[in-house]
Every structure is written in structure tokens, then in C-alpha cells.
Image (cartoon, rainbow, N blue to C red; front, side, top):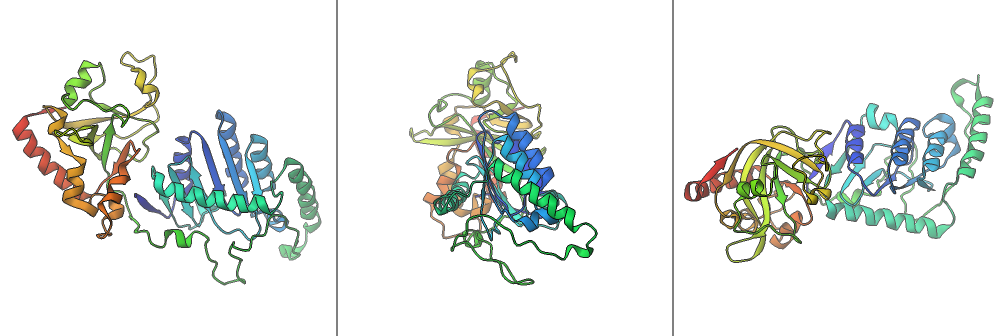
Length: 399
């Protein structure tokens, strides 16, 4: 599991993940800012069949003081987002499709995303942990719905805007806005942590969910990049670059179903073919490595390209690579991913490197259904040494 700390640029990370979101985004945030709400509303309106669900607070005092924006809620509802009100909410959670998550201290406001000193975690292309977070979101939403009708309607928002505007007008000229408006609306769930007195500590509702996770404080920039799928494995008697030329494919590109924004220029990628080993066992095979040029927004193929292939309908995004070195023999003679697991065990992935007792069966599951996954320096060193031995034996081609 690739888990990374984030202490700044929450907004940059949010929008980079939003760009690759295709089906739904779910948000839990006590406060909703006008600028962030307007930006998300515009994005929702520009998409086809996108779903957005948000759990937030609906407290008049917070609208009056500008901590949250009633106008922002209006933009979101008009764009088609579903909003629900929950009192005493403290959690901040952002879920993108079934792949990526941001969670931490940052509210969905401009200050939370760009100005405040915030801290959190983000997990990109991590379906297992994202599912746990989605299960939490669904469970909370289910309890909220069963408690009553707490969906925030446009009618309620327009009515609330009237009261908020009147309250702000009445407070003009009153020093310090000392009058407090107690009006609030939303579900009250007993199992949601209650706010503590001023200057006290608050308990985050997801604290237990991450207490046993070893956090990777930075990216390694080393990736396994899978080509082929479990439903359409590449024949193991093919030679990697010769096959690409035979099917009229770009030899210096590798394709993705989503924007691979995590891969940066200078990163190392190990090309890993979903195939079979010499014994006919279905397993990904590592056949070479290269230096990534990094993903840019223009890296998207379409049917106007002379080398366009029909299967790229599913994998439209790509990165280019250079300084490549690839096995010049059948794929089956490469390095089986099972071998890598057997030799390095918990040292294959950054998130398991400090978990020596983790079962190898659990380690093997980490790459399932992924187009690419980050690995450790240990794994890179092993693969380079082993590939060089294989190059000496079977030959290689540089690119």
C-alpha cells in the first residue's frame, strides 16, 4: 500500500486526483468554501454521469461568520451533487472513484487547501484501502439516512440564505460579532465523536482506521508498469520490443487506463508483462527497465493517431520513456513477480517494508487490478542485478 504524507498543496493533490476521476467523488468535510465549491460544481457540470455525494455541517453561525459558505452549497446542489447534513462532524475525507483517497485536517475550503498549516495522508491507486474508506463513508451515510431526511435541498438552502443574509445585516457595526446564532440543522448520531470544549483535543473519526498503518513519508519514484491484462495475457514466447513493432505500436510508450500523474520525469519504470512463466503459471514477468519522461496532459491517444489501436479505448493515457534496456528473448525468460516476492518478501513495497511479519499471500495481492505500483530501492537493486545477468545470457536491446 503506497501511503504518503501531505503537509501542503492539498488543493494541488485534490485536483490532480479529480482530473482522473471518472465515476464518483465522495467528500466528508465540516466546512465548504465558496471557491472550492464553485470549482467542483463547474467540474461536475462538465462531466457525463459523474456522481458526487458530500456530508457536511449545516450551522447558521458558521455561514454567518464565513467558516462555511451557504452560497457554495447552492452551487453544488444546482450542479447535481447530493449533500447531507450531520451535526458535530469533524472528519475530513475525499474519495475518488474506487482508487484514491485524501484524508487529514484540511476542510474543503480555499484556506484549508492552500493557506492553512494542514496535515494528512493521500493514497493514490490503492483500491484496497480506498474500499475501506468507501465502506466507512457508505456506513456513515446509511446511518444518517436512517436517522431521518437530512438531505440538503435547494429549497432549504435558499431559505437559509435569507436568514444568513439578514443576520449579517443585523450584525453590521456590532464590534467583534459577539452575538452567537445557535440555529443548526442535521442528523445527530450517537457514534459520531462529539466536539470537546474550547482548547480541548478533538478525536478524528478515522483515527482508528490508520493507527496500524506504516506511513511512507515519500515516494521512491520506482515503479512496476504492467502491460496486458489477466483477461488478455500476452503470449510468453513473444519478444517485448519485436512484438511492439509487429503490432505497429510505439516502442517508447506504455499505456494507462487513468492519468498516471504520480509518475514523474526521471522515475524508473520496470516494464512488467502480464503473461505466463516457463512452467505455464500465470504471473506478471519483468522484462526490462527505462527512465520515465513523466506524464503531461497532452499524453492521450485517440483514433486520429496513425498508430492507434482499438485496445487503447481502455488505455488512452500514456507516458514515454527513454534509456530503456529490454530482454531480447521470449518474455518467459524474464523475472517472475513470484520470484521477486519469494526473494524479498516484505521489502518489495514501501508500505510493507517495516512489516516483516506480513504474509506473502497478502503481499501478492497488492498489484492486483493495478496498471502500475511503486516498489522499493531494495526491489530496484535486485531487479537491476538479475536483469543484467539475464541480458548477458539472452541478449538485450537498448532504446
